Image 1: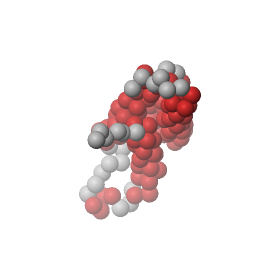
Image 2: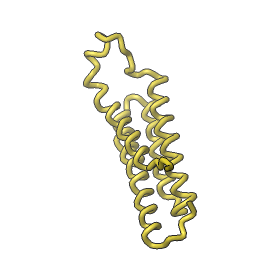
Image 3: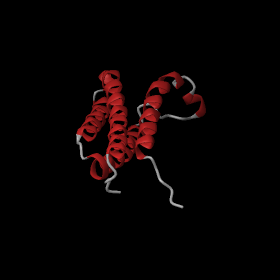
Image 4: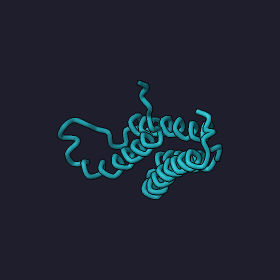
Length: 129
């Protein structure tokens, strides 16, 4: 039996985990130093989260593009979302203005990729996987 991973679901979960991290972290500001934990504005942690979301998302979306629907829209939307996440890191005073559309773009890209995948499977059975 072969384990099959739904990369779009994993990409959405990773993106939402990133969004939760960014939303909840300010609420935990007062308690983290008590435990000796400092991930606030931690350069390495932030970029690792972005890299993880980018790697999983790129794999999922490229697989959908190459093997199922051949439409670049989800890949372009995802790329814009990752770029907005990077801009959030570079322009700290505008973090919220970049974060909200970044998460929306990334989640929408995965959702659209999933829609195109399902649409292709229901409309014809000549899927190349």
